[in-house]
Length: 53
Image (tube, rainbow, N blue to C red; front, top):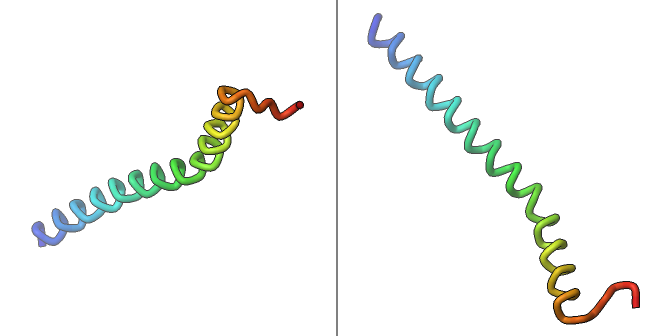
């Protein structure tokens, strides 16, 4: 019985770890379009293609 309880605790710890990693991945995926847009805007400014002209 004690082994089963320890195993449940290990599974809970693994689930918490995986949930944190999944959350981190989702946040990165959501931030990616903003990073791509900012990089594109910076590249245009460096190239001298101002958006206002």
